[in-house]
Amino acid sequence: QVQLVESGGGLVQPGGSLRLSCAVSTSRFGIFNAGWYRQAPGKERERVARISAGSQIVYADSVKGRFSISRDDRRNMVYLQMNSLKPEDTAIYYCKVWTNYGGTYEYWGQGTQVTVSS
Image (cartoon, rainbow, N blue to C red; front, side):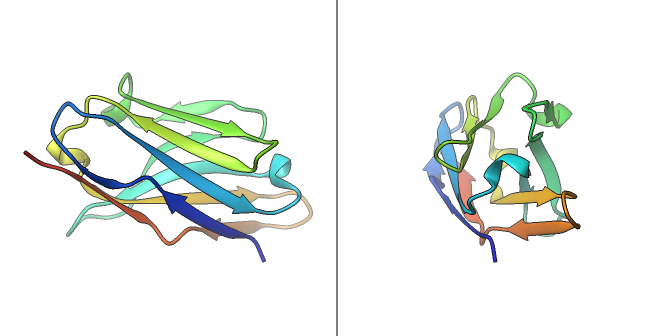
C-alpha cells in the first residue's frame, strides 16, 4: 500500500507564497504520475497541476505563471510552489499519484489546508 503525506499548508496573506510537499512511501516512485488537487468549500475537487513519470507538466489555467510543480524521484517527493497567492486559492490541497504500470493504481494523501486571507 502506497501512503502519501502532505505538509506545508497554512495561513498566508494575499500575494504571499507557500510550498507544499508530498512524501510518497513506495520504492517505485519513478513509475508514478503525480498531481496536486484542491477542493474549496462547496466546490468540486479540481486538478491544479500534474507531472508525469517523465516530468511532463500541465497546469490549470487559474494557476499558470503562479504555481510550479516538481518532483524528486530520489527522495520520493512531490512539491507545489505557490506564489502570488489569492483568496480564491483557499482550499484543501491533496496530493495524488497514479500509474497504469502492471495495473491501475491510484493513491491520495489526506490533504493540507491552505488559507489565503488578510
